[in-house]
Amino acid sequence: MSVIFAPSLLSADFARIADQIAEIEAGGADFLHLDVMDGRFVPNLTWGPKIIGDLRKLSQRPFDCHLMIVEPERYVDDFRAAGADIITFHYEATPHAQRLLAHIRSLGAKAGISICPQTPVAMLQDIIEDCDLVLVMSVNPGFGGQKFIPRSYEKLREARALIDARNPACILEVDGGVGKENLRAVVDAGARAIVMGSSVFGTDAPAATLREMRALLSNS
Ligand code: DX5
Ligand code: ZN
Image 1 (cartoon, protein in one colour):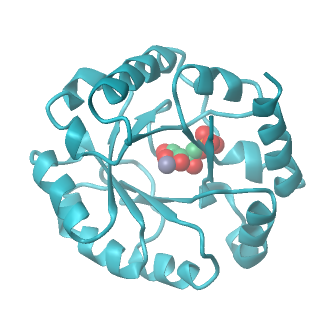
Image 2 (cartoon, rainbow, N blue to C red; image 1 turned 120 degrees about the vertical axis):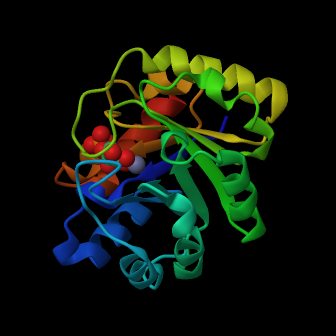
Image 3 (cartoon, protein in one colour; image 1 turned 90 degrees about the vertical axis):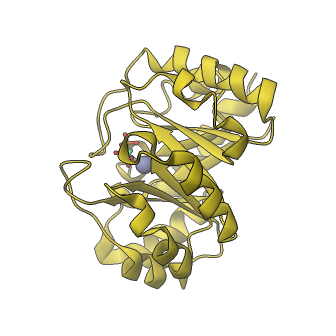
């Protein structure tokens, strides 16, 4: 089974971002996960389309943009124009998720939806066919370095079952508090794209860390 590694640049050192991207690519990063925060949907701020457009020049890997913003429908066109390949917004951030998923697809991007820890997987039942990616948040979004919420394993299993039954091509992604100690467990629960921030960039050698993580998944 192939598992996608999506290191989150949230925990990278932006003073040497080109080197940091080169390191994770050397370590086998499949996607670059880019966390967009607006200080309203989540209590933190990061970057917008300009920075993503600049980063685009540094990498050929798919850009996996995680929008933690209110009114995401106002900005998806700008993120697509900046080079986002996957655009994931929050179920909790818009009353018209199905329309937005369809619109993202119409832009030629993959459409993702994310659920916060308090949102049941069942809320995706009527829109699962419209999703190219489902992102189960395993922490409350806003910050790197938080502790994995154990209930997320059950949510991943539920999401896996929904995806297998109704839209097997949909990617199931997990984000928050994942590292060497629980990587195997989230994959066993059904995740196929793994976002990792502090557990990769918080180490001295991100490339070596990613290789060790890959090895952990091949020993089974
Ligand atoms: C948090 C972000 C994550 C963050 C994960 O709201 O969505 O992508 O970078 O960081 P870690 O892996 O450190 O929990
Ligand atoms: Zn994220």
